[in-house]
Length: 293
Ligand code: ATR
Image (cartoon, rainbow, N blue to C red; front, top):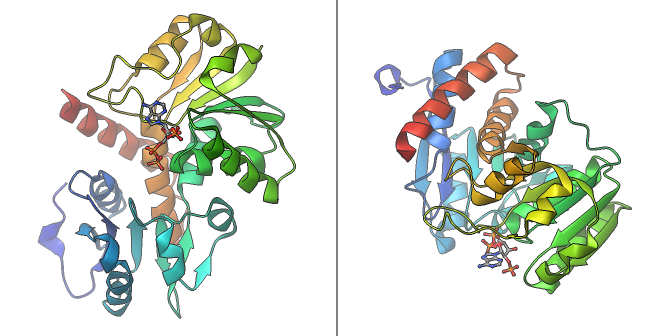
């Protein structure tokens, strides 16, 4: 994974802006893809605090930085500083990818594609499916728009703070005509059956690996596919319980990898061939799992 030996005046620079940024996995994803594809580029993490965003973006543009990922806490604020925005990023109200364009950066939301890829890869169609969405934070916003855009039949949003779930539902309904029901954790008995459950809260993330948003085993018997956006631990308690009930389970690593891959494809205007896509995924999975031990 050493790409700095070949840096020269032609090397294209990419990066990620956020705060904190020290633990970002994005540099490893992009530099691995660059090495496999033999592209002359380098991807660097940039620590940018809240009040430094505007000047950082202007500076990046003037430095001819071709693409930038945007992460916490800037995904919403960044919209003010770009000149064009992709349709789904606009609907979600958050941007995580900037692409250099003639007059400024264009913004995209590749979290949308990251979560969609989890289903595409397994040839799971979302059309007419009934989906339970746990959580109503930033990730849930992107997932809800993705589900509605792919014509699911119904979305239940379960959240501790109902008004946060309501604001996600209101936002989705501005763009899509989809049935959404909001429920509290004490009302999950209302769900008789669902095809898919997507867990988007931080509950169960290391070091709190004994926690799960839903403890009741009966719930897991009612769903077929369980997705957790957490990837540390590799298998959360939520996924363990789902697996014990016979569900197909998907952890958050696919979403992380495929949102990165989509940014890369947008920047270079390419479709990475499947063999390289999965080769890089294997390398990154092993690299990441080693770090977990
Ligand atoms: P973001 O995804 O924007 O970073 P977050 O603050 O991490 O947001 O919260 C994401 C989700 O995790 C929210 O649904 C949050 O519930 P609230 O809307 O009620 O705050 C949920 N969440 C985080 N910790 C939780 C906890 N201990 N119990 C229940 N829900 C929790």
